[in-house]
Length: 337
Image: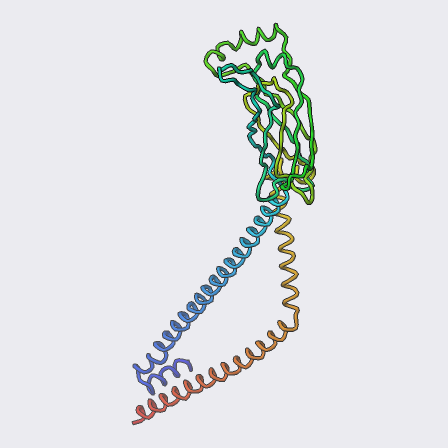
């Protein structure tokens, strides 16, 4: 009952219009303003959180990408420095001294010297890696001619020389055509006669001569020139090829024969060590005297800024309060008049 009397008294003193404005309209406006301000604050905080998350994610992704690519580049550089080329091949162009010819076009058939060749292995830099064993061989493409069949065994010699002409290593090996009995040779020719007719196959053999089984490069004088000599004046050869093959062992063998597995392990190990180095460096930085003094100075500056901000807010709130009191006084004066 007293509440109703108070309402009636307020309506009588303020008037219906002013009562509705103060008791209904202003609270609704204040509620709407507070609600909008609350949602604005939440939205702003949410946007700031999203921006912060995006910035942190971008920074983390960028750092991770840099570390991964750095690990990959380190492994690739180590692979090309540690693992040499597996094979080096050079064509061999044999030359010999032919037997003399007369002016009446009568000449003696055959060679009057051993076939020999000079192969330039490298001219600018060291081609073979020091400490790496190499298998050196010569491949001879020889026809199965009656001359070669009757030749029997012959010698193949090679000299490794430095750029100044000094002989670093030499080797001589014996070889011959692979033997075939008359029956097997006839049967082979009967079976492959269509290929012989159309030219897709020939009556020849590839003779493989291993000159060095575990040759290692000298530390001070690398091999630059190779001299090859076939010690037979009755041999017949289509072509020849000189090969140097690396014989890998240990880590080089694993890296060459299992490249994907070794690359995954190597890149992971590089990434782990780089991350450990970065963490140790970060720990050293954040515990250094310079960093701690910098943090302390920034903290004092933030305290001063917060104090100034709070004083500014207090001044604003007092100004707003005085303005409201002035408006209320003006309204009360108007109502009393």
